Image (cartoon, rainbow, N blue to C red; front, side, top):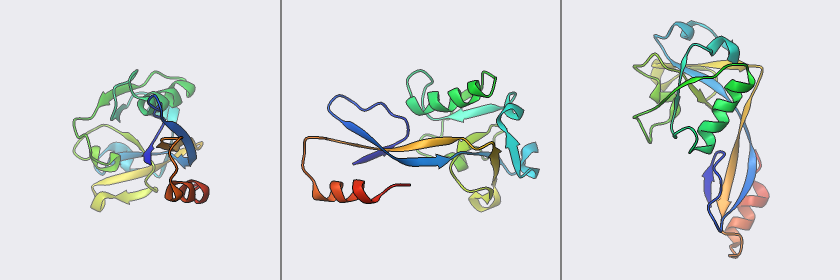
Length: 147
């Protein structure tokens, strides 16, 4: 089983939604928004959002961009050079922001801060797997894990 967010399954794989995670906004601790506890998405229209995939080629980046579009603006995005880094740490040392599923409050040893995003928006968590293979562990996992 592979876990992903909004990734289109490759030929031969099946995708099952395990649940939805609430999205929040991460900023570096010295970012002007770090003093706040919550924000609305339209308030972030002039910020630069870090993404991990290339828009148009990443289902998850496209999902995040669509959330911004649904809020009434075209977001400025930057593909982070910190690939493999959790989104909460990628904002450290930058003026950029990132969507995260990390709970609100201080994070990354105080180097980042997570703001509640109002109203709530969500991102799916998917499982990818080969549908024709039999695997008791996979069956157990998929029948018990729902977020």
